[in-house]
Length: 348
Image 1: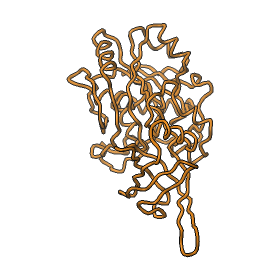
Image 2: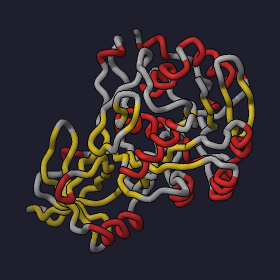
Image 3: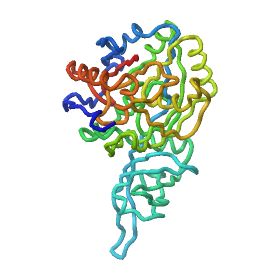
Image 4: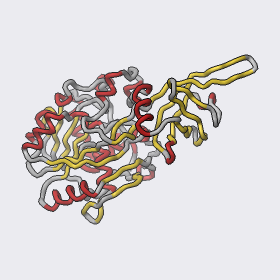
């Protein structure tokens, strides 16, 4: 299975840099093995039915991009250097793995000051990244980060424009609860409270799971034989309640539909012999064609990067040839791609 099997030409103008307003007005491509239907997210009620269960990732994106200074007293007097820090994942003891630019300007043990009363010390350098220890924790850390940080927009948006205050709302789901992600579960960005209420009233149910999306979700696949690719690990949890709800829906003949590839990867990580059990830990599950799905019956997801692991995941669900047809249709009909783009409902 070759990397080139998952490549396609995407016109630059179809890459969305802002979301649809309102959220639910984004276009929705609904695909089955036989048909492709063009719709909108606000009409998803036409394609779901009572007894379906949507699985939602309630991770909360932190404003993980920080700009600060490193200060030194030298023989020539006080000196400072501007340092950019992007948090990647939480570590034990309140430490964080981080991208630091320029890393060579900071020595282990030195402090980077982001705002008055908010700083971090570089603990060590590992594989071109840093491990930092902040001077605040808990709610104090969350508040300081909210004030000083910027949203970590995906590289393909950040290359076109800087993050701003609007992104703190736009790049967060309405049901975000547990802080820790540095990328949003973007399919979920299309829901607002009114649509969730409408779905509940028609008999669609919801389960919340947590997978903290890491920056590794944007890492390119560098091997030509995709089966040899090593996935990044991300922390996730399917609690007792969610596992029981999902199992009950399966037993009753309802469809389990994760919203986003993160929710899908998590529930398949928790799969056991055709069912699901409570689960917590690091998952590096890699889903590509040939994978046997045990829990997910369909998937709501945005449109993904060429040659990405997410392109491989949707191809595993729908088949490679079918996904090529779906993406050709999406491009021809000017669907907007990637994190702030339009969405799809894939029903194998």
